[in-house]
Figure 1 (spheres, helix red, strand yellow):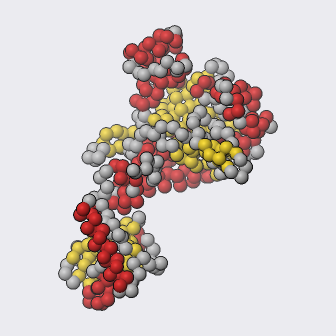
Figure 2 (cartoon, helix red, strand yellow; figure 1 turned 90 degrees about the horizontal axis):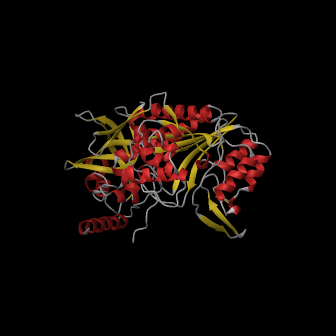
Figure 3 (cartoon, one colour; figure 1 turned 30 degrees about the vertical axis):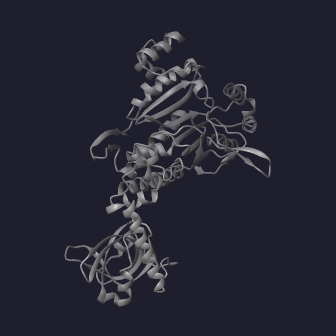
Length: 484
């Protein structure tokens, strides 16, 4: 820390020296020939080009200097010689540091080692870095510091930057995929008078002008379904949801969801869509349907096979595979006893019987599933917004897509009977009848077409396609407790 303070003090002195010379250390603009990647693509010996970026390396050869200039698109080497730039810029150069942002104009040439290089004729200081970058350009070693100072993580960690470049591409290509299939992108309210569409604890706020309590939405669903009533047959939204719940490797209070609804389709159609979408993204962005997850040492720790077709199995069948063929013939007490004593699961006294089974499913099926698995025909208690199965009224026509131990996407045949929907929501709300979204039910009473719906957790999908082990590794600025 003392050494760092000395470096900061030295940079402050250089800042003062620059201003004493009448040089503005924080310039307003600099015209460039393009990004550094574009400059490299235009590179032609003898050509004059202009580039801007951050100094990330300096090789001192006496009167001549080789520096690396970087931006988000790449790196280019620049060559500065006192004879080329003159005494004034030579004096300015002595006040530069690693991390400073500069703009240069120079002539393209190839060094003896074959490196494309700009021989600088003139340069301009664009922003003085008053703090040093992480030591030796090796990146931030402290994990929390990487999340808290993501800008440094992106600057110094090529792997991390690559993850976020892939995330950007995943969102972009998801939009393209859906738009090519005639889905239209819409925006629905984030501030809502009733937090509906999922069973979750919302964040609350207050609108002063209306004197109204509001909630940050927990799901996109109920407003998108209103658009089905309104005649939009294929709609989607990629946006943020907010849930006032725990933080874990798989959960962040603010997260990104894709929800899409397709009039006259069903849950099987949406399963096909999900499978097609994720395979498209894997091939487009990762170049393969075999996704390798590697540890810090570079060794493969897990391989996910996305080759189609993906397995589809009923909820009751996959539970029987792990909990015993007789699981659903047992009494409530026997199921609870087996889960506790044989499977060593923590079963809280207040859990309903279907929740005990769901806990077994989550721990023994979901968390242990690596390759894609569509779990279909779930108990209706788990999914109050899905259509009841015609052959078994205890089940609903849904799927839950599991990849790499987490739920990536649920999909439904959407419930469009307003009377059954009201009853389901009342059962979910219990004594809190004020939580029923009457405006949504009113919309359903005007007639919603049968439809299929899907929700894809974009953060979790990015984890699958990049090999990230924590959701914080794929969210640019995850929620952290403030530093004391």
